[in-house]
Length: 321
Image (cartoon, rainbow, N blue to C red):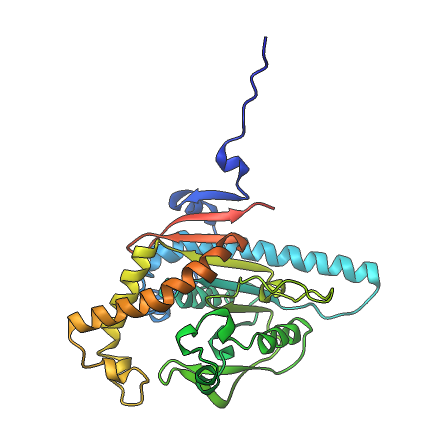
């Protein structure tokens, strides 16, 4: 008699373990809520969805998981200290947050910072975005890259890698450049100083991007080489486009209306003109970046948070160890 071989399920073959919203929420157990409704409202980005239910069911289980990961990393550090007989200071735990334009990365990064800073041991938690490491507009214009802003080649990757290397080395007063969304450019001679945080959150569209192939036998590091944990915010492309257009429409009456705004010329557009303009920008720039550079990095993340069209996270995928 022929032996019947039962093949493993598709889920078993996946490097991720996938949870429904309810299954993930149950993993919170008794992890305490440390944010008030007024704080949650303040952390929410324009047109994003963040309420107490989202914090309770998605971010509190994630906070609990990260506390366990950080504790395990610290234990491993102490083991290595004993083995090497050294007194090295422990390195900051670095968390990357990636995903498309308009997916809600900033909200996720800010709520994580707020929750992690309120762990019982009250760690110092800093947050930076990679926008500050974009080349200044004058450089992008000179090199014909203004239409590629946000693509990997528009970043000063060497400066970003040096920044992360200094952070991991435990250096004091490491400076990160500051970006202004109002003037759509890096601010000259302005810096965010990061001074030995316990945890650093790094948010950006392409932080999980793979590096170039080795040349001359020397490997080129990735930004993600410095991450201890990474999160990818995911949503369907048609949903992302709608969120981008909705945000563009809302900005006409807020940031775009400021005379100093780089996008002030869009503030007087009619609804129809604004929708056409935003859709054109999305299709010409953001969609191309999504397909060519951002979405291919999704499988490099430790955790994938899949959003529904309401902005609520409906599914969580955690990489197996």
